[in-house]
Length: 228
Image (cartoon, rainbow, N blue to C red; front, side, top):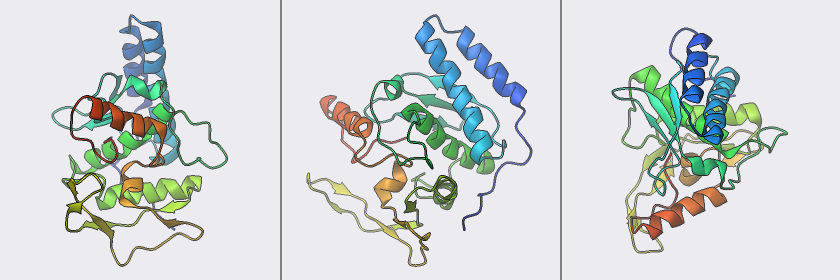
């Protein structure tokens, strides 16, 4: 039902990914960090083959301290493209939609996948085309394509920004509404904006809620869900 969204032309040289993986592991003094640095490249390779037809160009995938409480993972596209994954992804529990028959997918692997969708958009268009990178047609397209491949119970519909209104804590927040022509894959339901934003995690995943609490402790504005 859902086609694979557009991708950069040409296959990605796996030799480049191997070089990045080897250099990242060699540069680690800590053995545990070296293992994690190897894992993130293994997951990049796995997802690239599974969903992106090996067309994403390899980039540095760093296990490093993102602004935890605000982000668990980040994709940078200017001036250099690279991905960051926070070490907490190995320590916290994160509930996610099962991928086909498997529920044993590491949370950090799913953060890598989430960031690779951002990377796909960046490599195709040279950047992100919308102030909200979780509401673009390409983002929704990738969520739907991957969800159908692994039989996730959700369909992701295109959305538009509605009028802001106060939430339960009195803060004004944007309201997102589905476009009228949103089609639903048989046996699924339309995902909310928050479910789209935290793809492929569940809204109430412990890791996401912990991230929210950390931000509250730091005295920073608390978002409904952390960013990726």
